[in-house]
Image (cartoon, rainbow, N blue to C red; front, side, top):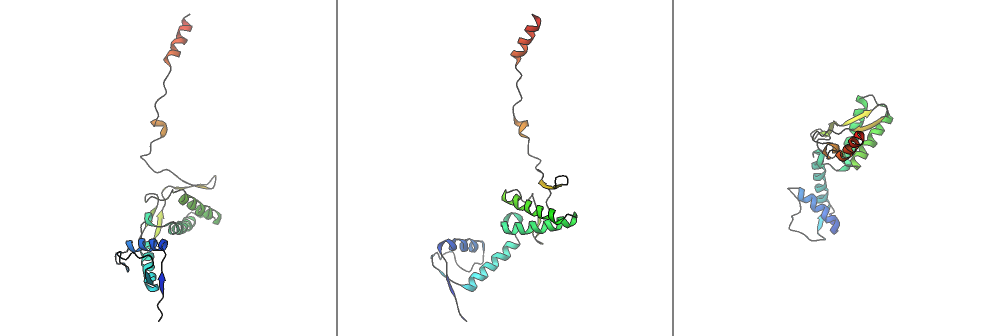
Length: 171
């Protein structure tokens, strides 16, 4: 049996420290802060496996972007099958989801109904498909949102102009 010793650079050490910080039963103690601390390969593998298992059971907000894209692609397939969509429309939906993630549209828990036990997206309430233009849109579902026009002050009518017009009519 051979034992490999891995030396972690300072940048990689920060990543490993953040993983270890999340893990209550960590392999390394937080007191050891040497920049070139030797680790066994099996220790690192075990640590990464624990991190992977923990990430799989996370809620929607705590999933990283690649996991979200995978879940959204799976949902696009099921959504397309349920609504008898063509493969072209399913590809459009996948691209739409990717663009929404890039624009931070599907980041909130209320935007996506996600079952963390089965790790499947149940529904996306704001998703609508316009059959005329073949485009997907996300409708604004926030009921607390007030139109900006209602927030503006009302237009002032110029009473002086009315007075001038009335005087001209009298003359």
